[in-house]
Image (cartoon, rainbow, N blue to C red; front, side, top):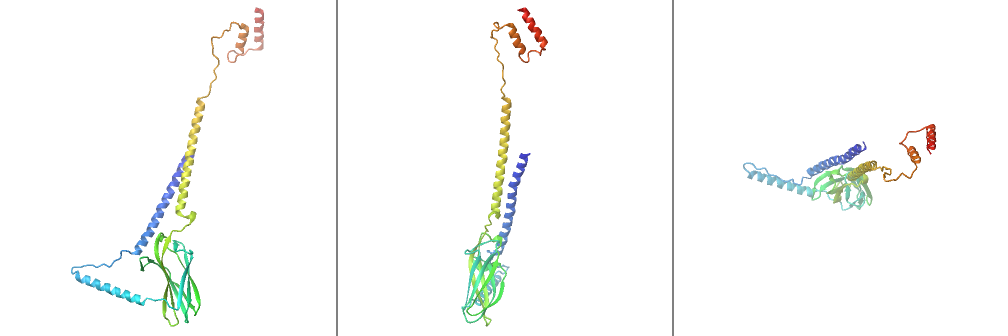
Length: 301
C-alpha cells in the first residue's frame, strides 16, 4: 500500500511542474507576441502598381513628399523648454538604477524650478515607452497626469508620478520618455523632456515566490520522495531475504552415533536402568512396577 501511494505521489509531483511551466510559457509567448505586433519594425511605405505603373509611382512619390513636409513642419512647431525654467527627475522606486522590474509599480519625482520673473503653470506630465532605435515610434502610452499648479518666480515645486511596466516587456530594452508641459503668464506653452533614455525591463526578484524557484523546490521534493521510496523498498527486500536465510539455516543438534562402543563392562541392570530413564524410549512406569523390578533383580543376584 505504501509503495503504491509513494508512486502516485511521485507521478503527481513530476507532472504538476511540467503542466504549470507549459501554461506559464504560453502566457509569456502571448505577451511577447502582443509586444512584437505593436513594435512594427517592418513597416514600410508600399506602392501598389496597376496597369499604368508610372502614374501610381508618381502619386506615391508625391504623397511621400507631402508626409515629409508635414513631419518637418511638426518638428518646427514642436514645443521647447523655457530658458527660465529647469526640470529634473529622480527615481524613488527603484532607487539609483534604470533596471525597472516588470509588473511592479515604478515611481519617480519631478522637480520644477522657476528661474525667471514670470509665473509658470505646470499643466501635465506625459510618460511613454518608445522604440529604442526610433523615439518617434510609441510602444506604450501611460495616463497623462494633470497638475495645473502655479509656480511663482524663484520658487520650486515637486510632482510625483507612477506607472507599471507590462510583464510581457521583461528582458527587453525600451526608450522611456517623460515630458513636462507648462505655460507662462502670457499663455506661451513649453515642454521639457525630463527623461529621455533607454531603460531595461527586468524580471522581478521575488525570492521563494518566483516561479522558477518554486518549480526547483518541487523538483527537489520529488527527487527526495523518490529516494525515500527506493530506500524503503530496498530495506524491505533486504529484511525478507535475511529472514528467509535464517529460517533455512537453523542448526539441528544430532546425537552421538557411534556403534564401536563396548558395553560389556557395564552391568546389565545399570544399562537397562539408563535406557529406561532416557526420554522417548520407554513408557512411564508406576512406583509399584519399579519396586517389583528392583526385587526381581536382587533375587537374581
